[in-house]
Image (tube, rainbow over all chains, first blue to last red; front, side, top):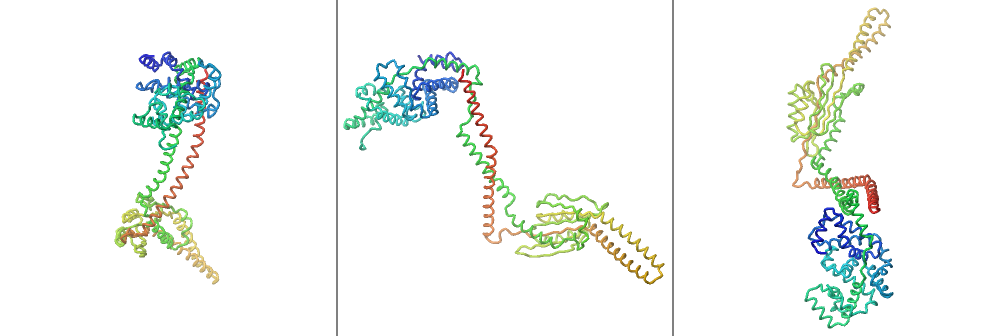
Length: 191
Length: 401
């Protein structure tokens, strides 16, 4: 969506146009939902968190400063909602990740693939929630370090160290799944 | 692992989040270090894995749910959600702490400050008071050495004890014209110079047409003190008391007015009766024939006359007391604050007093805070719980439809 259109939609939403906001939800719902799902670890909480995030965004559009990217701002609200939800649920969500995920995965093309996806999902869900948010923002959502710092409201140095620790933990948990030096080469240097 | 390894930096290396120099340093190390190269490969692998997670699409219901909630929020903006308590619990706790500390400090300081304003060195005043009590035991003129006086009249005695301030005293406005009133004032004064004040007392007494009936003088420690009993005409009483007060700082004042009107009338009536008895007895004596009768009458007559004398004496005393009011003045020379270069003992006493005062204030402040907390705590708890329940209800109503 072109930025001007988005700005128009935001302005109209701010004036109370529910239809305009609905369009914004349509644009962002998949990204926000995915983010919430990876942080909360299950669909039920993800749905609640995403819902809360959108409603909260609508209600606090008045405080949204136009110079901040709407996407970043929305991500912050969503991360907060998801982290809150996770904290409220305690460890239960992290220890019982949703097993139904891969069924909806159009890329799933076999039992092994399903198994790998579940392993990755569980490994992410086992991380401390602050590290989880950072690694999901970086490697799932593809945010830059600066955006992450803005979303999570921590200095870039903290983003760097959290990400490093999260990846180290994941490396240990998933060491048998990463045969691929070649996979590392093709996906690794994206930044 | 040796110190040259770069594992901690590899995550940032993958994302190219570092300066060119740092990047070059790590690249050179990787060329040389097999272990770190393997580690980098493993890290690349895991990043690739995470990046390969299948995107999840939002459930179809999500957009509709958001739309419904937004719609409801738009239509019932007031009911969309009760506001959070406008502050976080941490803020509340901090504010409570500040308030408590403030109350504590105020509790602590206000009495202290008031005490300092009133002047801590009240020690001289305290000594003065005890000395005054001692002198009172010596007996003022009101008791006059007569036992009868402490009867019904004593009960009618009206006393006005005045605090040690130079505020105008509640002088009694009874006039001696219609009623017979014995007026007595007791004053304790702290004066600059004892001798000058004593001279002025004499002038005041004589100027008012009275006299100094009694005076005693003592020089305890280094400060002279004494008691003077002034007798002045009743009409001059208020003037004299005012003049005496002007001599120094009034530390204690007591003014009493003893109404003896009824005793007066009673005594006069009894005297008239006794005088009639006397006349009657004299009449009997004229007609008496037997010596034994004569002796009996004589005896009775002398008894009656004795009583008449007694009553007359009492009446004279009362009349005199009513005519001449009494002012008892205790004079003290103001204690010199420092007769040496530094009054160490005095300072220590003051320090001790101040210290103990603060300790007492702390204890009483702590007590007050506990009491205050006991008052507020249930209210805060009930209010907080009610608010949380209300919020939850409203939120459930909001999420329900």
